[in-house]
Image (cartoon, rainbow, N blue to C red; front, side):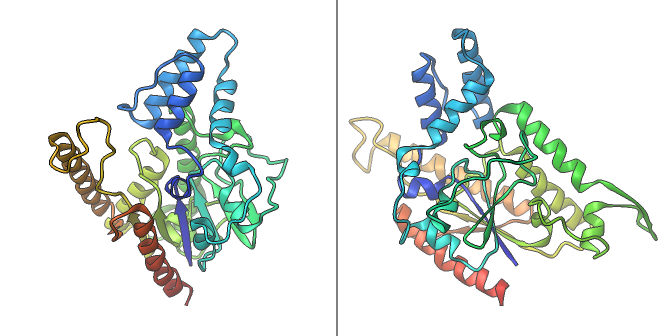
Length: 326
């Protein structure tokens, strides 16, 4: 079976949500602070949160998280709209039953069901390993939390570290059995060997059991939980410890273009533009080499624009998901 892992790129393509840097800048301005786009996502948030808490005696960690949730839920996402023809509808129409997303909003669910409303109750109030939504016959997991539950939004080292701790505990949970020549068995090993059923309400095992196609996600180094899953999968597979046979494919839709940040840099021969383009290409080459070392297939989508690259990604996904479904 196939699983989609979708990031904020799908929202940005439709003009529905700001990028992370833009969101932090917006919240910083609201509180009279400054954000730093040069920092990683985690450190950028940590610094801003500390500034807000120090400058505003009425602010709390919860209120800062609520600001993130409010900033993500733009008017374009809150209003009832026609989703036909959107990239969300095209992606959710693919032959997959499970969709993972790092997005906090409910655009994917509403593209499946225009009347979708998140359930009011969930046993998970902080982390997001088992909570999901059913919409239009699909199961959607918000792996880094959701705006309807601000406390679940994964922000800062404490939350990411806690998420990673819970993921690792679940993966390597001892089953109390002894496998001949393999020592004590653990949850993931038993599932892969067909000795234990995969939990239906957990997305983390999909990285070892299903073909995972990643789109619209930058895979920033801050995504500690996702990188750990990819790393652990790679190590177990390379060492031949576990029978891991699934594919993980990263579809890159990054464009080789630079915004006109300087009035005098509109020309194609501008030195600043050339240096910025070269930096982006070098960054892409590094990411490709990194993903390759982790056993993740890298696909650069063709096209001279963002929409064109997503069209190419969709064409590829139809073939990839269709092949798995067949």
